[in-house]
Length: 336
View 1: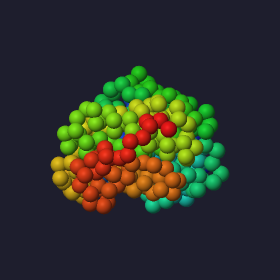
View 2: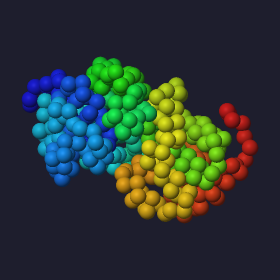
View 3: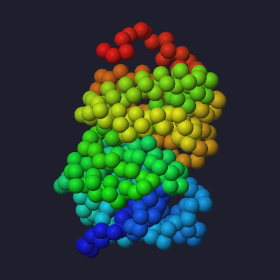
């Protein structure tokens, strides 16, 4: 095994988010290897930018696109996975087969494992049973703003304080502030579930229900996220921070959010597949809605917003009917 070169980092996933994070570290002078699929990498190398997702932002000399996964991770001080949740397990399987040390593994993927509904940390633990720690990045962060160097703050969590500090140090700079954390469950639940609520916010705004409705949906959506988080072992205070309320507000209120845009399209009467095709990038909230609803039923947790979004996405229920059913629920105390 090659020795770890402390100034080199591998970012796995050359979409908008992976590229943005690679840009942050490369601008600090770190050597960054950005791994992607061969055709994708060929375009990145030829054009010196990610024209599809982040057009006009030139790559620093320190950023090297690579299509060879083993070469990309060899000797890297940190391996940061930034692929969509449906591709997460496949990438980790390849890393495990290559004998990649797990203590250097972190991810910025937001979602749950499709099918099983497990947290991504549980999927990682199954593939790396001897792991000492993983680190997870989450928080309110649109890739385009990060790539343009606009001020952003995120949270980085690990069960090992040294690991969270190492990843935070690699990312932290004048325009990108990384706070350390230790609630890996809370960061994962918040990062996944906020996408579901953003679909709901898009639906409500698309139907013209106004700011009052949006604020109520965000607040009650946070209550759902906290109920699920507590049942899975997260801490309440995590959801008051960047990876909870911060990410939820961002994703529910700005049209840079693909999940919010999906909700807006559904409210206009578009069908799900056409809306996803027009967005042209992964909309994590669709698969996450099914997974969250399944986990809520399994755990006996009430998640009415998630239930109604599931009905719209997968059961053919009209968006206006779904919102009216939410508003028509039985009166109850806000805090029970």
